Length: 581
Image (cartoon, rainbow, N blue to C red):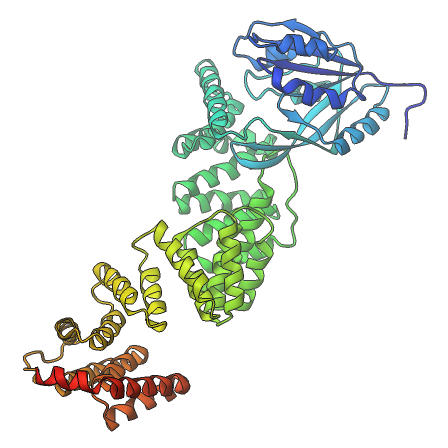
């Protein structure tokens, strides 16, 4: 309802230093809603003051004294409006939110007895977070900011009996996009906080901000001590439950960050006694149980959360990230118990939530490979790579999926990209070698198989295929060398004299039998094929067909046999000559 005969005046109050590049972009779109602009300059050396005056601002100097509240209070001292909007120079409002502010201004009560929460969307020390913050409040006697750092107007408004109203007006805080600037600001803030703690060691709000700032600087072990001060305070637990909950959640999170999962679980379980049903608490507890490898309890906690919506609160939360890890971790839990269908459902739900979506895409790609859904695997791995995660494993698996659908050139490129990133990615080496082998580029196949063997001498398939290639190239020395190594690794007799190709064929038949007895049918088939290629025999052919039936690849087996017979027919003279030699 609109206020009859009352048009509230709104004063913008800001403290700035060297913000000439920011002011116009922030203030100019807000002119339609502002009645007064108060700018407190704390020592600019650029053209901040000139730009502010050009935008209609009343500019006042205030020497910086490492106290944000003092500067904020100086700004509201000059304000003449009925209500005050405070902003930072790196804040931004979208046109739709400025329209909402115009509408809200028309409803400001004449009694000046309400203050308004806005939604702050910030890329800060906690990642991309959303939280509520009082940004508009009545300009009345006794209102003031408190705290040298992370200053708050809330305590004074509470004492004055002001009613707090939540809005959906969003302010985008852009000041932490640059990691270097973010770190610089955090270091500055930490210095002020720790200085304050020297003279006020029991100030729990300072401990809270010290903990959060240290965690943002990846100093979680130090952050824990500050949060414990709050969590162990019985008075806070009874009288300020929201502050206690927030501090406890962060304490548990910080314990988890340093891999003290049992301690983190203890904190979260303790919080559940008073805050059962808080979605964020159940999600973080579930994730921690998963990290502690208690998958049953992890699933139980996470399954409680889908019915609970995460909401924007006073506590800065990266809602999209939390939602992502809820579904991602639940998907992992289902995988652990073999519920692949439910797992895929969870991973798919997570995809549009956060930049870490590549983790779900990688798993979906892997599951598609296992289920021989190769086109799906190609799409999932391509999407994972498109997120910016150019991991060698992703390119290697993409190459495998592309090869399976017959896109050999793309597969070759994917394998090569994997090896550019990590020359020792053994799956890429062997799969690329297999690709070249299948298109009969034996020189390249030999090169990459040998590269793989240099990293892992136990690759049986590489040695067996190299044996075939060396026989085709009449490289008897290398053929005998690999045969000897295979016999050694399979604990087969080696003190044999090889007098003919028939002897070599017999040895590869024994290698095939040993591998078959171990249940390694695929590699066994390769060995029998080498034996048949060297010396075609009916008994070897029967074994090849038997293994082909077991693997369901009879067509492939018949093609291999036909190719071997053609090779023999075309190379009989060369083979006969070599046997004489």
